[in-house]
Amino acid sequence: MASRITLDVRYGCQAPGRNKSKMLFVGMMLWVDFFGMVESKKFFSSSDASSTVLRVHRRYYMNSPPHDRTLYDLLQVEPNATLANISKAYRSQSRRLHPDKQRQRRNEDSNGGDDSALLLQRVRDAYEILNEDSTRVPYHKYGLIESTNDAAHYLLTGTSWVSASDAATLSPDQRRLLELMGLLSVSANDNEDVTYGDRILGLAMELVETVRPLVEGTLTQQAVAHEVAQECDKLKKCALGAQIIRCIGRAYRHSGQGYLMRHQDRLGVGLSEKWRDAKHLLTAAMASGKLVLTEKQITSQQRKRQRKKEKEESSANQIQYHEHDFGEPLMDQEGEDDSIDDLSDHIMSDEDIRQFEQDKAQNAELGALEIEAVWKLRKVELDRTIRQACQMILEGEFFGREEGWVGTTGQVIETQAGQLRAAAALVWIGDIMVQCSKEGTSWIE
Image (cartoon, rainbow, N blue to C red):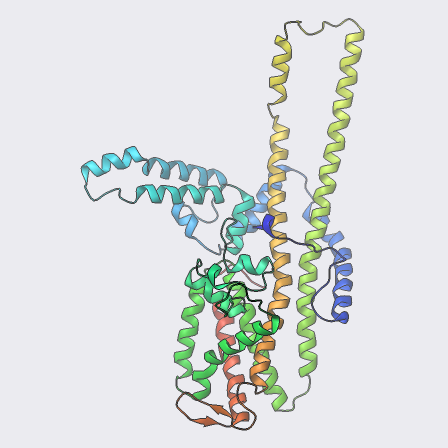
């Protein structure tokens, strides 16, 4: 997934928001650069390949539960299994599901082995993802699979909207995530452009139907909480589902609390909103800065190794040249020794193997940091969009300034009363979404 995401998180990037936000973002990046110089020494304190591989395994597989267990369950391994355990489990599953074994089983039992070919293919696909840290880490931490187009992919790649035809290929849970983020086009015409204002309007219309039962009193809070919790339990299993749900839930809660505080004429509402925006920019800057510093460190290490290797090769060539000058025997004219040397050149030494494993582990870490940086940046924009949709509802544009809220039963609710009920409903639903996003997931902010 990381290789498919276009990311430019250098100091020249522009953060969403006004000019002050951009200046704040750049200032934070400079602070992170200074802070990261100290942290990077800890991050790369050991150049030993084994310590790098163990660090990746401990950080991503042992210290946090997986975002999703489906692929681990297919191979019948624990989420903290080593690559050797995964390979062993794959060989065992392949032998068990081999067509010859299934043919013998069908002879013994006419009902057995019908789905073995499909299950074997699923096991192979799971092994392809879990066998490499570069694909296992995004799956373990975020549930991301590179070859899958889902709601998380559309969000991370900066898609402004998803057409109805593209959304038709997604599962109902993925389409629901797109609806909650306002990325699902409500237009039947795929060629029709969808503006940012259309996205906010669609979000507001969807949100009105969500809070309507609480505003009109047609459902109790317990009933609404049960429905929201059930939906969140399904959606958080999707890639980046827990992160998206929590971001949306916190935007609901913050918007509702802000309106209630303004209604009570309480001080500090504007300061709270500015602090929230600054906090989001700070987390995005820290994630982006960590990615930049890590990439610089890896590049620096690779250049040092390359210069060292070139120096060793140059020294070896000089030694060989002097040996020839002193009358050492040259290679056989028939080329037998040349072929042996050519073969030995392709055999990796123990040092090369260790270095290869270290490079793979570092690339896996770099990919995880890249995904985290992109998500932090997209989170700023998603939070702003959700809050603008909430503000549209709480400002009365869906109530009518004079006639008030007209319910489905024909009951008319006075405008201010409807706004207060809607704000309280947003706080209630937001709290439930945030709480559900934390339960049984590996992501902690």
